[in-house]
Amino acid sequence: MEKILMGSIVGFVAFTLISYVLIVLNVPFLIIPFTVLGVVFAYRSLVGTVRQIKFRWNAQTWLILAVFVIGILGQLAVISPSGVFQNGNLVFWSAHGHDGVWHIALMEEFKKGYPFQDPSFAGEKLVNYHFFSDIAPAMVSKYLPISDLDLYFRIFPLIYSIFLGASAFYLTRKITNNISASVWATVFTYFAGSFGFIVTYLKNKTIGGESIFWATQPQSSSGNPPQIVSNFLLLTSLYFLITYLQKKKSKLMFSICVLLIGTISAFKIYAGVVLLGALGIAGLWQLIRDHDFGLLLITFFSGILAALLYFPNSSGSTSFLIFQPWWYIRTMVVEPSRLNLIDWELRRQTYISVGRITSYLRVIQLEVTAFLIFFFGNLGMRFLGLWDMVKMSKNSLKNYFNLMFVLIIVISLILPLLFLQKGVASNTGQFLQYFVLLFGILAGITTAQMLSNAKTLTRVIVTVLMILAIIPTQAGLLNEFYGPPNHPRTPFAQITKQELAALKFVKENTPIDSVIVTPPYNQYLNLGDSIPNIWDWFDTSYIAALSARRTYMDDYEQADIMGYDYKPKLEIKKIIFESDNSTEVKAALAKTNANLVYFPLSEKPKVDLNKIGLSMIFQNQSVEIWDTKIHNNY
Image 1 (cartoon, rainbow, N blue to C red):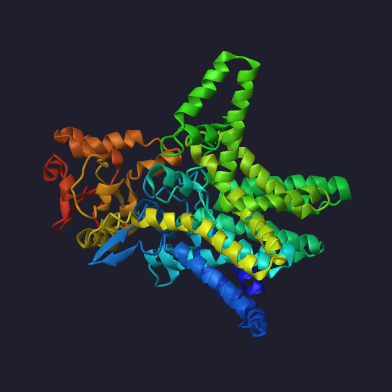
Image 2 (cartoon, rainbow, N blue to C red):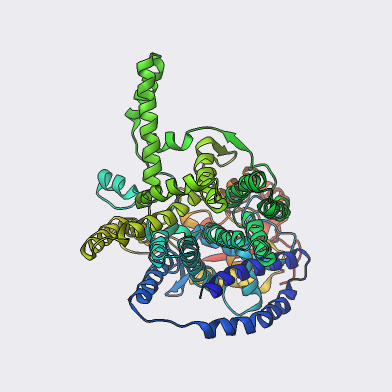
């Protein structure tokens, strides 16, 4: 099983990289023979490996199986209910009506071929986004009769969740050769969260607050493909690095390490930064200590591959780091949605203004306390890993793997404490994901060691207490996903069957390069529906996702994150839909170069579209679609 699962992760990365290269070369269909060749090449080895599998159906096997099944189900529970049909309407829970349809829009964009455009910002190159996680599902959807919805919300989350658990389990076994430690590390990876639930309970007697201390937790990563992929790729990279260090002359291990580490930046740049940084430092130390270039060569070739994949898809406009130390801790303390300790901040400022030595000591006391809250709050029960963190640190100068492991934790903690990202300041908080992830591995090792010599009753009590301390994070996440118990458990947004018919019409009856103008999002509109229409809920990429056509400008939040100046396009949209001056509307529409005007009837433009030369090509009780006659192939 170890060979199959860890090999499958390598296969997933190779499939994604090959697919990307073939798309860029405009020969994506070659992925079919490449995949067939890969299956044929691996068939004999795979069959031989499967035949060697012998399950011992004892208590340990059932325990491992239970941890994986419950952990996977917990992750699927926060994504798989979205993208399903209820009474003919397509419904979404939590933020998936925004995040999920954005990824589906990207999948549709990749099917069109290279160069990539932003599907919701037509005419602009797709930049400053980690889109590699959407390539594999896009190619599967392109050549197999499986819907984007099933691939994004159910099939790939299942695969990713299996990979996450497997990478945590087998990395820990590789480090410790201890099954108990591997099981506990998997438990911490799937279930352990922050201590945010303590804050929310003290505030309003509810359980939640997964990211109150800023770090998002692995439980919610299934709803963020770049995050969960980077999580299991980081763990898998470490797994093959330790294997490489054990087999220094293995060209296969060297190649696998370069593949994994070189591509991880394209899945998530933050993971690439911490992994390449730690690997580079360890490589320099290996060169100084043993005159060995092994790790430095992996760093060099991985860095070249990372640069080739990342920089062509980055404008550089939002990648500049701003030195802003302690911003996360400061905002954690004062932000009303977090700790809301305004008086604490006022005291700190007062002590600084006094300027005495004793006052500065009080400032230091406050800052140290805030850091400890930040540190332990984010870790939750994973703080148990501190014991093995100290042990690894002591041995790190003699053990290159330990050095890399410790450095990744340190780098992923220090960088967000020092820097913000230009454009979207809080983006550097994503470094913290790897800090909590690796501490989960250490916590599993420490817990297994604590219980190894304990009496049976002590083990049972500690295990129960551990689970009780872990459960609130998972329970709070499900509560936030489905809504509070005293509120009807209804989806957050929907696309009605009437609107789905309109989107299907566009997909089946318009040229693939068509551009659609849609109404500007009206945050003050509230039609009072029990399940709001998606356009009444938030500004999203749902039209680009479901019609497989680009839109002129939608999803302003995503556009802002990626560094586009969306405001000029937004003003043009406002003129088209809000002006009653036909000449002005016609001139604004000409600037868009759009082929279609699409709108729900409640968002109908003020001008008569017939009078400015448009013709209606679709109408039902919910939606109208008009042709601008730039080209007419309907």
